[in-house]
Amino acid sequence: MPDYKKMYLHLFNAVTDALTELGRFDYGGATARLKQAQIDCEAFYLQEK
Image (cartoon, rainbow, N blue to C red; front, side):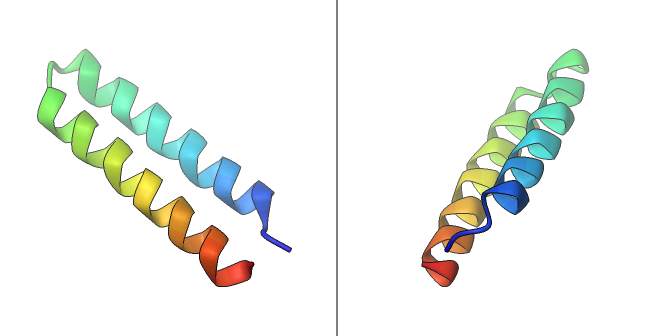
């Protein structure tokens, strides 16, 4: 069974970091961080399925 808590915490931290980057007008960094978090969580899900 996938570890949804692990995925949630990973995404929550990525969103928090992306918001910080947006506050610095680093749109590219925020976008890259969110895309990577999406990729990571998909990998977590597929590994544990």
